[in-house]
Image (cartoon, rainbow, N blue to C red; front, side):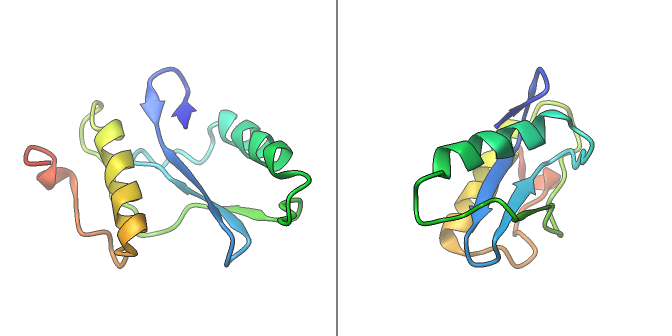
Length: 101
């Protein structure tokens, strides 16, 4: 999701835990636009077999954080890659890996 004016983060629908998970390399929990994205997802999912009305918002930890201001897209892609591979135990990457990623 595009957060604010120049930042990317990942919003995941976690069906097993009945939660929305936000993976944000800047870990800013006070962004007013994140609840708006969740409302859009709830609207999109209406009429399907999943009722998202009482789901909570969670920021999973650990979640690697960026050190510079221009790596959010790379971090977001790495979050997606790790989640797709189910390799989220501590997320095996950090800011130090960004030059080679």
